[in-house]
Image (tube, rainbow, N blue to C red):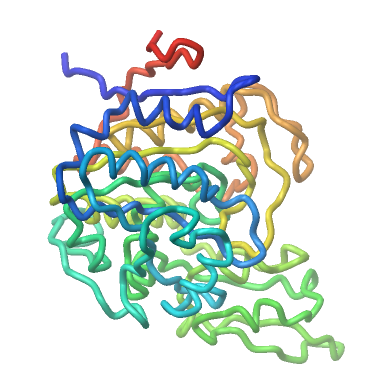
Length: 379
């Protein structure tokens, strides 16, 4: 019988700071086995969109940076430019947003590098020979790093169902071209629900949305499927829920998550030294790419770490499922509810980690090792 992948779990608890909880998780996963002297070590995170306030805390990242330095590594913080229109579409705006969100050198102790260059044209091709892609494009600064620490905020996502390590790797390690290749879904507008506010029109990176006069003279949005990138930003910003995915078959969303898993695999396939950390706090319905933050769907849970990204995401998903939740968007979540699937019923969230296992990125068979925060020993 194959050995189970180990996922270390440090729960948040009273009278212990969340940073100290993170340090316990770091101690358990042992950075010293991954980061060697003089390693150029990328810390992959999401710097947060302007206006969002549930992105990863800079004080958490400082703890990660300090541990890398103790191991003799040379840390740098890294993310790729966004596909959608926002405050992180090019390296200049991206760096400004990161610094304004608290990720300056004085706060985190490491330089910031936008992995895919000024306008998202700096990448390397990686062969994976998988179901959807034979090769994928990985942002250069990530592809060339000697070691990689992936720190992810575990939360919901409008198209993927949830976002954890796999999504952080897939979208966050890809240039704009790679992000386009992963999405490939098409959107439609319910003209009865549309109020003609133009938010989708202004935020569409593919210029696929137009404002037109419908029957009766009402101004509504319409999506042209040809230039549409399928990024779902219009769904995120629509205040009335008028935008939805135009289904072409029952497997559309599963295929989307499978493409993400393959891009995630490409980002780490050739790396021997990677550690993954999921922070389960402020678990919001949507991702940190939004210019706002919604009410969390469950209480803060804790921090999990592993060298297996598939096992880590599966373990965190299971913990969110098992815990009782709060009333969000007409749902009252109970222990055992598949909360992400309930929030985003058109998505196929499980296909992220299921396909990840299928292509060899990790295992769904995991052992959860709970860390005793008071004594610092696994239970």
